[in-house]
Image: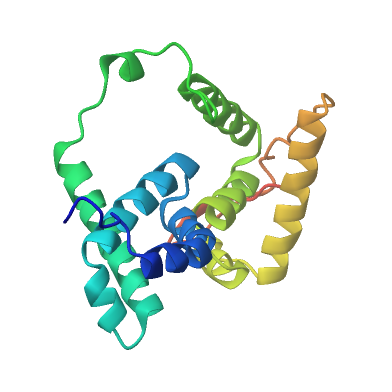
Length: 194
């Protein structure tokens, strides 16, 4: 480069004036964070300017630049994941910013566990199979050896009981009675009156 020659060609400058907002939008979609997106755009523009003659010769310059940006993003992710070191300050920070703390997550899980334990066994089974295992009513009915309608009714009752418990009005669980217990040769079942 000579002394009087501009560092950036006028064509590259004109292209970037038009393309920069679009490149920023692509980078933000790729990274999810504004600072990372700005870094990605900066790295991509630096590569773009170095290889501007290739961009000018490309049949589709926008596609070339998009590909350059995606490749830069992927290589930065690979490079960062292999060399990233977590700061001691981050690991020992008293509070987590931008999301719920670990303690609140544990407290939430413990609260849900206590709520589930307050349910009668059959209602608890239906709620766990439905919401934790994500089973459809027919599969839950097969597991519990009852009809799909019974599963829906039991889930409704469990939700009502949970709602009442969370509002502070505890609905007592019915106790199984001796008359409700049945025994078959293949299995022993205790029925809870609905």
